[in-house]
Length: 91
Image (cartoon, rainbow, N blue to C red):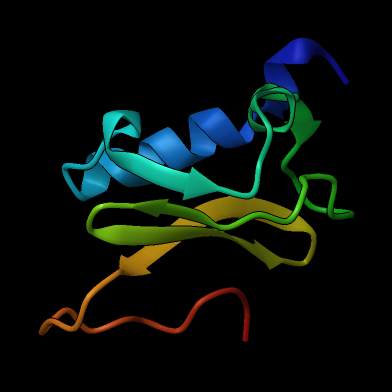
């Protein structure tokens, strides 16, 4: 496995943030240290390698999701609203 196959929670959370017009400037609290946020891991199938976390911004809550060992970040609204959440993970 080479470094091109590795990601960090920072990268995966940023991808999710961009879908919701959010940014790291809006982070109010996270359970990840800076080192854990930037730690590289394999996000593909086979086993969970990324640290568990919760990250709150002004409007959203971010968390890890997995299916068959593949990992990515998802989010939900922080406050009540009309946004419907799809099923998360595998099924």
